[in-house]
Length: 408
Image (cartoon, rainbow, N blue to C red; front, side, top):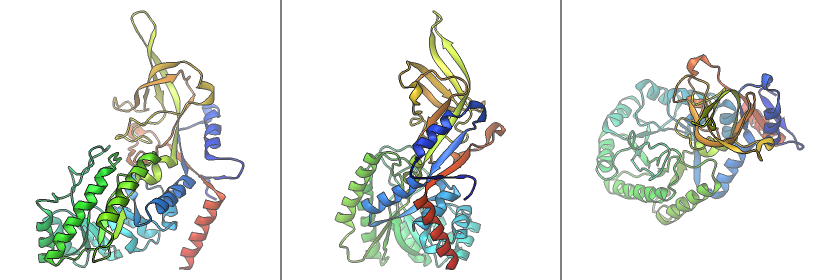
């Protein structure tokens, strides 16, 4: 097994492994991401159980660690790719082109030509210019109209950048596609990354079905509904709320139509957010004092930050898990800074923590989404290393899938 992998047997667990790493001597530690593949398996089984009629196409941009991609491919997941590089990665793993959607409404010509060469037909568009590009360079493509449909609350709204106006532009773009002989097979939307608005999925699905009906009247017969991403990854209750709204919308507006409709989604954060724990170490600290000399705040500086393991768009969840030896200690107003000299490299702005010493380890759960993938190596710091842990059952499953793929 690869040196970066740790096998978890029946006498241990990822939680015990985290405790062991956190207690190691300070001079032998480095910043570390612990990736738990069994957590990813559990998320996939949960999706299959609760949303059996919605096929997941994992958003590669969220976390493209090879272990994650290989596991999801073995589990039969589809993939949402946004660039030629992501397409190349997934195609190189032997994933069938039918299990890939090129979900970028603004594609460079060279990426479009590559998709054509490898047979990835499904792709999104939201403008007449993109349709003309598809018609010229990939006329046999199967296009999905991307509409704008924003959640009321999301960490990152995508509607400002992508998606046509469903009321004023959708029908005109369907007519344009028909004129250009581009086959439109469906409609997609994305409510925004990290959405907490479950009800927006119900309204989005209902709106898409209206566009399907408008297309039917124009002679455009569509059969694919892509409800995008935005699913919570570390909050089971919120995910269940999403499930209820999506299932209700499918039952009321999709099932029973004259033409069967396939429903897919593009979850990213859902699959990987809770699978990664970031372990960082305090490398320096300082005190801020009030006029009487009392400590008003403790400044901690750690060996990781927003330029590596922590997501710029989600600083609210950067709360470390208190280790056992500190749970009964009094808490002080604190701030946790990342390791670069950038003033915006702040992991936790205002937080109450028991006092930590230089060399202590801080453990941050739920760091699997969009952190390392957006890391830049600012100031020349080496990226935090990644260790992958998995059970014997998951290892056996991966090995069996690899053998099956090798035999064709």
